[in-house]
Image (cartoon, rainbow, N blue to C red; front, side, top):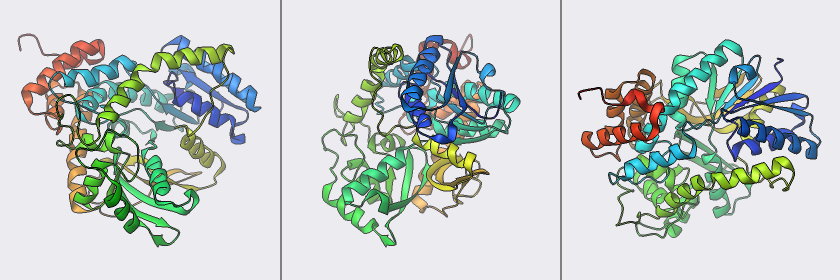
Length: 447
């Protein structure tokens, strides 16, 4: 195969894959390229390829879409590889929420931190490392862009064990900045920002309209509009969010990307009032469960689009758009700055562990992706992020080694888990629920 190929592993992603194919079809940079769609479920890969061909035809794009169930068939010579896998699929995500809930632990997302994030890492890290090893063998010059959560732990595992050039992408900071700009009445083309931290707890360090510092206006807007612990349920980004406002008051900087993600990094926001979460977080949990439950409906729609019985869905604000912009910059050499990417720290944030995967701005161009240093973070923020990065390091080591002892330590170190007895129950129940994907973490005979 030539180096004009893009490989998407986990092509059954019902939102990301159609968005990526649409964005590629709108870019003339990729005319003549081949998109290899890999999924363990043959129908998923075939359906997405048919949808892709229809998108390309309607947009007049010269793109070829090829389905695969074996990634090794798709990888040789690839220029870009993207991973959006979900070990266990929607049912696995349900287990990551439901198992901790049996022990009184409510999560709003459960895919990055909290016990759900640990369980997901234990399943995803081995598979992603295996994918990266295949890339190192079959497409050693490829850029791997990972979207699979937990993003921090997954990128750390790949960069720690393989030579593959790897970056993690998440658009939470972009969405937060857009909503803040709209709330402050600043046109999108005039607002700029610097974010830094860890994925799903990334802090707004600087906010400007041209040369003008508009952080004071943000503080005023948050003070005037944000709710409190008894706020009604909401999960939108913006200045009205109660948890983000509380963190701004506590640490002096505004976090991204919205309350349902940032709340899970702390132990005190998710204590339920009866059956209802405080701090407006119930809406975030409800939306997560609704999103998981809608997966089957999305597949019905995609099958209909593939066979032509329904029109293609309109594409608006798709998650894929930054991936295509990054690939364009690498191919054409036209540099630009990305708001946030996830890659090894190596001093970009000097008061976080050097091996940690951090979310920082980056320059993208012909030489790839170069993260930018942002300086030291405020001490309190650095303390929170350092503790989390160290917990995630133990999670990665547990996933790589299959050590039950380390897996229990990773769970106990999470602020949402009250102690070893609960951690053991969660790990045992999750091992039963997830089956073969977590067999390595079962109790040994006689324990």
